[in-house]
Length: 467
Image 1: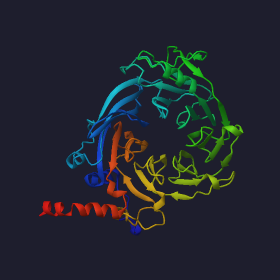
Image 2: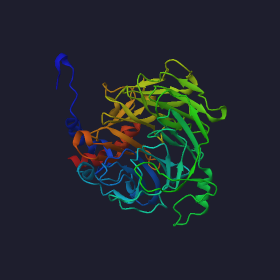
Image 3: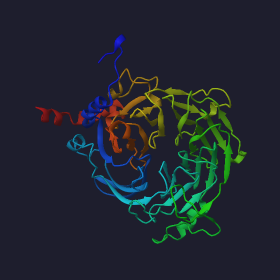
Image 4: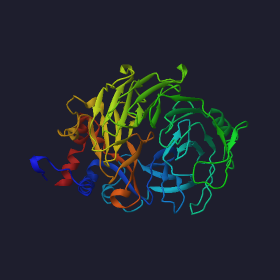
């Protein structure tokens, strides 16, 4: 397909999807496709709850963004995660994109006061999750203790276990949980970054884990009489104010992230094109403020859990920037270590791999989820499957199974090369959303000499079967 001037025309969404689907049995070790009635704006892995010979069962947290005919919900699902090299090729190739996957089963529904824009689980206790909606408050839920609700029109909202107050305007997307302390971080339209400690509340919950306990029973906390949005009846929940409020952005804060090695250090990005590093020990002013980290709004940020000097940012300018915090200075244009350009639309989510320090993923409004390895930049590809000359430097896998913007994804720390991703398919297909759980075949990321040696072991078997 050619355009005038000899440039190759971009394939349509349907053409790209058809080509991708034909390659699924070759590129994937496992893929589960789950059609969603309503779009999900966030997806997160929860705790591992059962292990077996060929698969594990794990909690999965999703949202349902409805049109108002039924309530918005926070969904807790059970996901059967098939172990590597177990899924049959026929199963992988014969999925139905209009069907619901047998690997994903709804376990519990929480009726959420307003749309669930973002979900984050607490590393110290992954049954505790925080959610953002179109409200100034952060809502905290004990998803195991919460009662299962039936989402019908007119049903009363579920009661959050704790409400974090402190924003002066809606805080819709920027949300993070600290990996080493039970701290919560949020950013909002009020241009502020707000920090809370929920240590006392987690301790109280752990001391009384009875099945009937559906809220944090902490003495001395205030109660709030309105929860989120869309709630006519007053609902009381315990609430706490912030540990600190940090001002430095000139526009909406779109994402926040903790430093993996410190509960006091964190970063934020926003619609002012700024990347800001903060340290709660030095006060409420920015430690470093990069005025022009990108040439457009910043949508997402992630801090490398293996190398705390590396920070990723994703932007409406379609690119991902990798910064070394040792080289950041306040003011002016940020000088990234590398710029990754492999998307044709705004980047919505970036996340480092929990398994390999140089690998990360990025998803965008172009419907693509890219997997990168920054150590491959400037080097001869060490894997035969990576030698594609027209791919951007560092890009080694492109997941094209979604047909509209990929709004969120999450690496599985229990099975590090397994990813869950969700897309909002309303604009292109007229449908709800798509949830996909997938694992690329390991020959794509393993060193070539390893792959060749393994294939050589099975050479006689392969030749026998093909003769």
